[in-house]
Length: 414
Ligand code: HEM
Image (cartoon, rainbow, N blue to C red):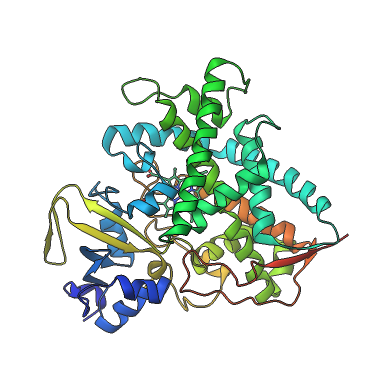
């Protein structure tokens, strides 16, 4: 009997919160292996639900409008990563309408502009740090903050970009922390929200002039699905929903250099073949750990694996386990970008940014931007603008979100 023919199993522990904190990204993978199943019941954070992985599980999770993101993540995390009124908290026509705004802001011409801005900002930061050894993670946060601000149409000099870079990065870094670290990050988020609300008010009042194609203009002018203007605080939340994840791509820049350093043959290939950069970026997104899981609450009843799911039930899709599922990926623990030469593009197999369709479901609208920036940076890095000095390159899978121990230090050439 294959894993996917089995009925839903049950975790041996009364509550899996401690197991999740101990095992991090490998929590689900270990349980799936021990229980020889691809779905099991468990309690996490005091709430019961089905934890599942793989193509079949992702198709159920993302298909048929079955799940909302209500109670999908703990409140402490939600307040850092999303917020009340944001696109992720909406469903049905309200969600579709707001999502179309994100899809427009992140379409191909806008992604091309984003990559051009990145090129400019990277050249500046490279010159600023010539001859120095710096952590790529921190430099990446700054470059991407400046890129995002210029791209979105925020006039230069209206915000302290270093401070904002710190605030935006802290929202992602502290997302899985509880207690003081999380509270500090939440306070920093509130300050960033206040800044974004002022920005929207200034754009609306005409105090700040921005071109009609810019993201800030788009959000400031946006209405809801009944054509009412977005309340200022909701528009502010969506500004952060655009800027914060662009800055979060910094992790993939770090992982791209980690991959190139540990698989040096790829450096030459990236230099020779522009097409290879796209496959390399996809393998970075598949192989390295970022969002471990995504959780959803059932909206309408359905049946799966001899189980009736009722409204309010919870399910957790293990993204990391799906990206390393040997039923989908041959030799999943090896870094092999060439696997994407023959990939069929099934939307429920490569799921670092969610599955299903972005326009109609909750899949991330920023995937094309993430791939384009990671691929662009991989090509830049392949031309050796820096060396990777001796350092601790280990990445602990127990720490969410993960990074190499030394934040990937690079020695910038003069
Ligand atoms: C840095 C790499 C990124 C990762 C790993 C990532 C991951 C994710 C994941 C896992 C989701 C949740 C999917 C779900 O609820 O089913 C998501 C949603 C979202 N992402 Fe990303 N993302 C990234 C980059 C971006 C970028 C660059 C943007 C925009 C500039 C973006 C904007 C969003 C938004 C607005 C949502 C909510 C979509 C909705 O609920 O319909 N993300 N992302």
